Every structure is written in C-alpha cells, then in structure tokens.
Length: 607
Image (tube, rainbow, N blue to C red; front, side):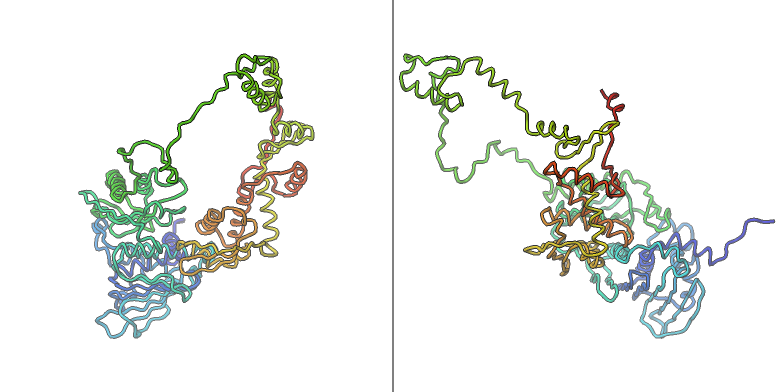
C-alpha cells in the first residue's frame, strides 16, 4: 500500500502562502511590486485596520485581458520569465508566479483590470483559489487588487498577528522600500481614510528627504562611485541624522531592496569614531551590478541576494562612504599650523599679566622652641606667632613630637563611611557604597543590589496601580517638543490611550510631538533620553499590544530606580520588607538578579 500521497491544490497553496505571505505587509510588498512591473506611473495603497480588513492597491499600468486575469492566480504563472536563462538576467521585481496564488489561497480577493485598448474591463472574485464570480465592468485602465479578510481560513496565522500599530509599521516599511526604489513614480498611502504619505514623482534626494522626515534634506551627503564591478550612488546621513534604531537603512541593487549584514558592516565601519555605539547611521544606497553576477532566487521573499564579487563590493562601498563624508568635511580636521597655547578669556586679554611673587618668612622654623630676637626682631616674632595661630598651635611653637603626633592623628581618623560601616555591622545590615545592602546569614552573607531591588518594587507598584487607574502625572511648565520618526509617530498615535494611562498628555502636529505632562516618576529625571528609550521600546519591540504596557512600565521602573539610594538607615528594614513581599523578589522585570548569597565555603576558597 502506497504511503505517499499528492497534496490537494488548496492545501499546497496554503503551505506556499505560509512561506510568501507572513503578515499583511507581505501582501502589500507583492502587490506594489506587481504594479511597478506593470509599468504604472501612479500607485495608490489603501489599508484598513492595518491590513486585517482590507488591502487595496490601484495602479494605472498596462492591465490585463480576461484570460490573463484568470491565469495570474494560478501557481507559477508569470509574465516575467520565458526560460531558465532569464533567472540570471532579471530586471523585474517578481518572477516566481507564487504571490497572487498564495494571496488568493488565504484571503478574499477582488480584481478589476482593464487594458487601454479595451472598452470594458473584467472583475474576478476569488475565495480560497476558487473563482466565485466573474463579469465585465467599467473601470479605469490598469488594475485594482482588493484583498479582504486576510487569513480567514488560517485562524492560527491570524492569531499570531501583532497589534495594529506594529502591523501598520511593517506595511509602511514595505511601502517606503518600493517608493525609495522608484522616485520617478507617484505613490500615495492611506490608512483608515487618513493620508499617511503622499509622494509626488521626483528625484532620489526628494524621495529620501520626504520619507526620512522634515529637516533631513540638509543632513544628506551624496555618494557617487563608478567602477567596473559596481556603480554606487545614493545618500548617507550626517552624524546628527543617526538614530537609535536601524529603521532608516536602505540598500538597493538594480532597484531591488535587499538586506545584507556584510554590506551594512562596511557602511558602519566608515562611520568609526563619529557615532556612539547606541546610534546607527541613516543611509539610502543604490548599487548597480551586472544581473548575471547576482542571484536573487535564494529566499522566498527575495530580500536576500547572493553576490559573486561581494568582497570587492564591500571595499568599494567602504571607500565611497568614507570619501563622501570626507568631501563634505564630516571628519574632524586637525590644523597643524595652530600653536598649542591656552585659550585666553576675552575679558582678560587686554590686561597686563602680573608675575607671581613668592613671599618667604625667614624666621619660620617649626622645630625651634623659642624665637630668637636677634633673628628678626619684633616684626619677625609677630609674624611667626601669627603663623602658629593660623596652623592651630596657638602662640607656642610645636616640638618634633607634636608634629609626629599630628600626622598620626590625621592618618588614624576614620572616614564617615568607615564609621557607618562599623555601626551598621553591629545592626546586622550595612550599606556598601550606597549600592549594595549586605546582611549576615547563617551560611554567609546576603548581598542585595539596591537599585535593582528598587526597580522591582517600583515595577510591582506601577503595575498594580496601572491596571485600576492612570499613573500620577506631572504637568510641565512648558510643553516638550520633539520631532518624531515615522515609526515613532505611528506608535504615539496608535497607542494614545496607553500613553494617557501611563501619565502622558500630548498632541501631535505634523511630525512634532508636544508633551504637556509626564508621569510624576519622571518629573526630575532626564526626560529627553527617557522618552527616546520609551519610544524605541514601544516602536521597535515586536510585541503584542497587551505586552506593550508591561514593557513600557518596566522601562519606567528602570529609569525611576537609576539614581535611587537609601538616605537613612531607618529605611533599610522597611525597604527589605517591601522587597520580600514581591513574589518575584529575586530578579528584576527584565530578568537580572537582585540578590546573591556569598557562602562561607565560597569565601574560604577565595581567601
């Protein structure tokens, strides 16, 4: 009996869809690339509920006749390949013929298309790869793809989708990748009836500046390098355009977006010494390579490409970025003609310098018990007595024994921290450098990290209050203005109720975030860096909406405990009691240990 069976087409299509269509952004990518390949000059993207309800792409391209409109949903049906040789000279975005078949297998699809030579177009409705309805309609030239109820027949995949804000961010990223590759085309993007991006046709610099945001145009440095192996062009950002995320890093080869950590490393290396470890350069770089020397068919989503001469391209890329930064004086320069002298303040430049004078009292002798009148007369005696009084010895000169005793006393005087250490040791607990709390136990010593313990206490307290009521707010005297990147803007807009619950009050005007109130916990801390961390945590952490609040509260607790210290020893007992009331008192919310027991056996081995 045969144990190997052929899968039915609908199951095979769903399996293929799992490789190509991972989330709504995957559908957007495939439809936008098809519109570009169709020769469109104006492409519109309309999305509802972050693509879960509707994804629609409209273009004014060539369109299809009735026969092609049906065939385009078949697996491996493509207009872009005629033979296997074409795989090694690709000039189009798509080529496998899997995208539309995969989309039709897991969604309700409606296609309206018309060619310029025809009077009427064709409308086809498909569910689960089955044509449900087909008719002639009046429509514009080009094509309109409507994808509704994505993953309606794969509920497990639908349940794994993230929050609307995260999914919308992925969609916008895919939209921007296609738009950056083709600045000569006009693009528009709407979500729930609201315009997200309107990109008129233009050049590369205009398109990059429109996507990178307001004020970025002046911070772009052009790159241009022509070699026999590769042509490099595009723009890199000045150091002030760097971000804490890698969101604004784009690489294209033959107008196709791709990811390559190897080439990213070359660009990052060109910025050595100019950026901190926490910041990443922004860039949009276009490579033109002989299609026969690259392979784009190594990954289902076609975002990974194999280069035949990648080592040479690495060196050329590194050199071209460094050269571009050098041409625009981005590197710090050294002026060897300047004399190495101190800078004199302007208010004292015109004053005459006064030479320092050394005044010596020849009668001063600390080892002499009496003052000899013959050595300096009355004036010398008076000055010597004054010197003795100034040193704290009265008018009687000190003996050699007095000086020895003085230095011994000064060396043996214990510091304040040593006194506190002794007092607290007697009380069974003592503080060490205001950072650790040490308590003797039967088997050794219990060492508690005070700031990590405070982090846990704050987190538990904030979570408990956050569930029932908003956190306490602190009104700012003047609103705090910040320019938001595209992902951050979506995060603040999409999670407005969450931010309000956390104690923030704000409004968004264009790309500007105006914050009028912050959590009381942050009122005396560095708001700028804290807001950057909170925004990055909510924006670039690919987590569910239910976990975003948990994540941000953990970040607030971490910031609130950064400079914490126990001011009075009376606080220690209450602090320890509060910590041990937490069921997770041994670790912080992000998993770092709070306490450590140093046993006598371990201590004996160390000694």
